[in-house]
Image (cartoon, rainbow, N blue to C red):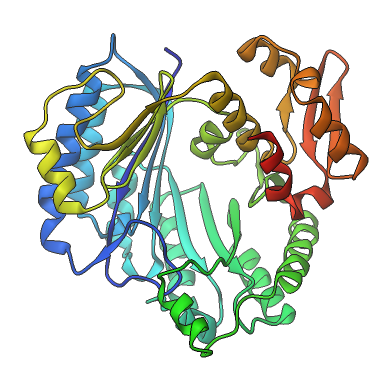
Length: 395
């Protein structure tokens, strides 16, 4: 089996953000230690069911707020994963963190554990916007966290930003971008705010307390970001992600997320975690206590399934092709290789999707790039603004 990626979902938060629709919980800190033990047992169960020792080249701790875990807990999880899987020597190990939860000592501890990529949820540089999003940090926390991370030895640091916020002016978004660039990150992720049903932000908008994001304004912010980040030396490699070229290293793209976008296997551990391996898509149960109970009481299942799975579905050929297209077209520079498509699915990309490819290339949303022997289908600049419309035709 080719090297896989490991995703660990850490669902704990000090406070749930107003826009958050992820599987996260506040006020559940007493369950952190039992949760860590459950993660270790799920690792044992899944790794033990594999035909051989599985190679791992990326690990990602997402959430929630992974930086709420004590260093000893992270050490235990990573130690168990290294025992049960075969890590490559250059494995990328990423951790998401909220700036208000970090200290110099904690960051030094992370580096000591082998965490070599840090993703900070900056979101905005402006107090009013951070208050609207109910974030617990301010911009000074971000500045300090970046400085501490660099001092701790992190040379691969990413910042997350949000745009299209209610009442956000273009000038304010531009200012947030400039302040983020001033921190000299290696990677930047930009996300347009979506107001999900059931979130506090949705309820506020329904009561007329805040305006819904303006799609035209958000598109203008996205185009401004594409131009400004390009001027600053960042390369857009995915719809929402930009990276710098690092001397002797190459593009600082997130190798873990590339695994998803290239349709390659990954194993998900933890409450609400998703996985895709050996032709199966899995999803663990959401509630923390139910996850812990299932893992404690469950037995080993055929790889890659786990007793914590709320859903495990074997994908058919049409499912795999559709997901491969949807994810691969997110790669704005790389796109989808016609050669890789033919090797994986035994068909020509040009024949399998002749009609939508012709329609969207004529509309200026898709284009062909690369050499004649290995052409790559990718979104145009305009297509990046209308990606969801394009993806729907390939699923």
